[in-house]
Length: 541
Image 1: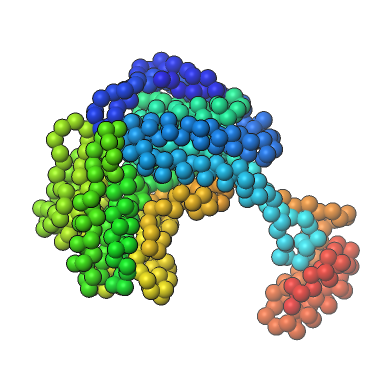
Image 2: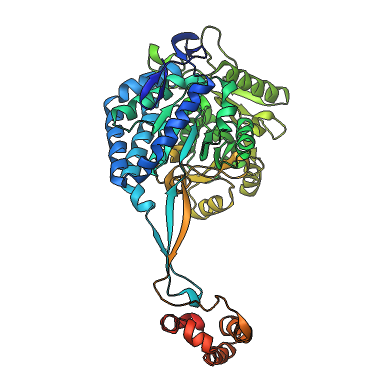
């Protein structure tokens, strides 16, 4: 399989990489890798295609997005099976968390991007500027590099590409090496949708070439989703050309279970939030704080629900959880569990990898945890659910916020006052009550976090606005010079103190007195646009 540049497959000259099924450890395909010159040609193609794509009306861009949506609908089963094969989640889950969000994003952007990016009138607040026609324009950056992760190789990639395209940018997509085959399928989707040559390229390159790609001066913006460690490197490399970035860098997402919560609902929801995609979700529930009054019955329900989960090769039968995508990720999970047990945590279920092929790890529930343990401080990114009993809601919120991350958080309560408090005090980019993880599937919801969970937003209006630059434009329909233009002279020197007091003195009577005094100045009468000022006389008082 090969990269796609300007709607054509290009065989890489830098060797090949196997595409590996994580359930078996066996390669099922090989992907050729581009060299530096070939990767550069994709940027050149994107820059050449930008003027025409930028000039295309919104309806033309929307047509491509809607056609891509139709292609995805027709190929949904094929895409889901490919995600299952290369990334490891069951096909049913791939439909749910990859294909469905992508379809919703394509539809939302096609229907609403024009409205969300249309010019916005801005009413001048300075009365001397009141006659001007002022607006905000939203204009595309140019060439956007979208770098996407292996945990959601179709949904995250397609949503990022679609937002950039809808805003009028051309796009170079670099999917994660571990899931390059899924990433390359996105190029095929848009080619079938009729996207013009050069508007989208999808590159498979060696990791050693990635820094040079990020540092390329032909890029106008970078959207990166991945680990904090790599995100720092991306930001440092982008800084060499002052290329703006959006970074989505993961989380250590807490759930707070109040004593009044519906424990059955909370247990089922949190078990899903912890183990969907084998816990390899930046919004996974990675910490739970439950008020001690209900801790024991809640733990019992969580363990019961967890033990129901079927783990195995998704292609071999009905399972809820497949393997981890990478062997090194399973090693991190094992290290976190071992560290917790060594420091006093109890394994209530799971806790040991099975032997045999594939990078499987069972859904694991830990109790007796505290913040000295790596599993409560570092992103585990695997199927481990540590639960900590706390004496009060106040302590739960404090501990939930005691982290360098802040992507998502969830609260579980039936009390409206508790819900409002959780919404207000939990430090995260998204806070959901009595549900978790799901908000990426809602195309109007912004995605991004506080603290070290990232910079900027993807998804929703905020994410679409990340794909454009804001331009302030103003038209002056009047004739003649403005009050503040050259020459200055003594009259302007005398006029300015009265103008300042006319607009900003604390006393309304003082303001009125100086407003009347301004009329004595010939320069003000000739250049002050008095008719416009009188139309907005309410701002003078």
